[in-house]
Length: 443
Image (tube, helix red, strand yellow):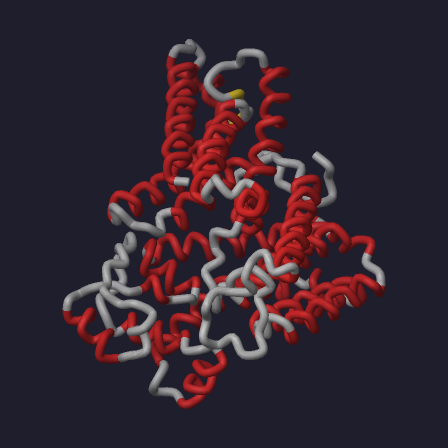
């Protein structure tokens, strides 16, 4: 996404410059500025607006299908076109997505106000990228920005339907090929006794794939919820508990079910301003809890037990926190550690004395983001998702599942790095859109 991010930045700069020059060339500059500030204008030039609006929709659907179906395409190529490598598919899809993202952006309309509000986000991202040259995790910074622009003004319900269909096809095909012996059950993990990944590589990957499917399913079924929908979530929780044995994913499904049932049968709870504010702070509270738990690990007995439940995540966070300080705009993970060494305090001490960072071993998304991109970026994410949750609760009953999706992902980020996931990143566009995304509208 780094190349895509560069070209999208260029398009935004050119459009900002074009609108600024247009204002300066007018005799009534105050009126011209007010018009450009409030009224969205077609990017680059007001040429063929009807055709470009239709092309924008075409670019949206092509890019969306490629974005969602990359894993499915890779799997099909591996099985039926063996002379092509997965890397070839990845290069082709990445190049096509870059072209479609930039092409769609050039066919969209933005006001000067929107461009001014987007500017701090792009400036922060570029400062982080330039401060950490060669950062292999740069996609965690650029991907959310590209996604929120690409999906801005998209028909959200149709996007989710398409994503759900492609996700279901990928899951069915992967599990079928695994059961048929065409692909291995999982990579060579040591904790594989009684756990099955069914071709997804790791048990937790299968668990979150099921959770992701359920989140999209709830978004589409929420307003017409029936008892068998609840039964589906219960069955999925049992599946996760018995097959991949992913405790986090199991708990997330239970949280999602509790939120849905409470919203359906006790909706007044979520209309309370206090409850909305509390749920909107789920990202900030989860981040604060994660970082404090990592810092105080070893000095609070309760955290030793929690560390065991979290498969050692607090230990790894604590070891990194004892090392070099967090930098304002992030740092490159340049340590010498490997997975065979991470459980040895002596190895951490050696890299700590050399001033090296090993945050790439942190599964906690908040701690990872803090070291990778710095506290400003982490705070911006937590504030942004908090504002979104509050907005979805206030925009109407039909949009509540979007808030539930963000709440569930806030909890999941405690154990995994998911802040750049497509479904939650694309919703950030609501903070800048003239017409916010909603499940209640088809377009």
